[in-house]
Amino acid sequence: MDNCIFCKIINKEIPATKVYESDRVIAFLDINPIEKGHMLIVPKQHWKNLADVKLDTEKEIEIYEELMYIVRVATKAVITTKLADGANILQCNNACAGQTVDHLHFHVIPRYGSELATVPAFNSGAAKYEPNEAQALAEKLSSAIAAIVKDEELL
Ligand SMILES: [Zn+2]
Image (cartoon, rainbow, N blue to C red; front, side, top):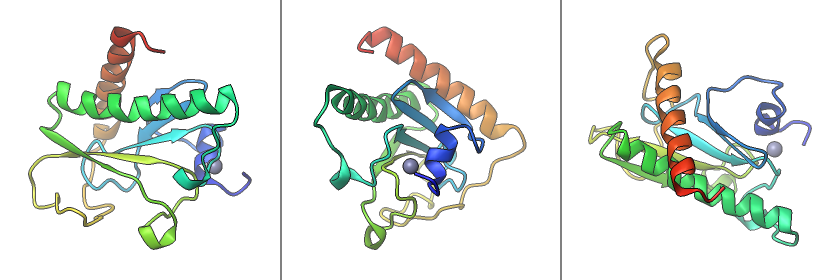
């Protein structure tokens, strides 16, 4: 899709701080994080949202299965690294539900028990990174995701 910011990230036309990438799925840090370590898990197939997902071909099924798998693994990485004690999964479908990028994505939001963790408030940009902090956090999460994927041997 020509004007899709996530397709541009997938096509490497604009940069992102990646934590996971395969042929089917990419995950990176949200540039307007609700909390530090806030990740977006995105299929490389351009589906607008969950209602737009097609599971007609083996390839589409594999993309969707890996997407859901990485949502779980990224959540597990937040907890196993002790980055945070918990996490929220947030997924928005259409503008009325807060969807601002029309390319299916899941938010994995570490929760630290701070007052930022008001559910369901969506305080984009409330957390600020120190210089190099985002990259270091991404490397930590990336390593944990890769280790879990390797350990579980499902991909
Ligand atoms: Zn797209």
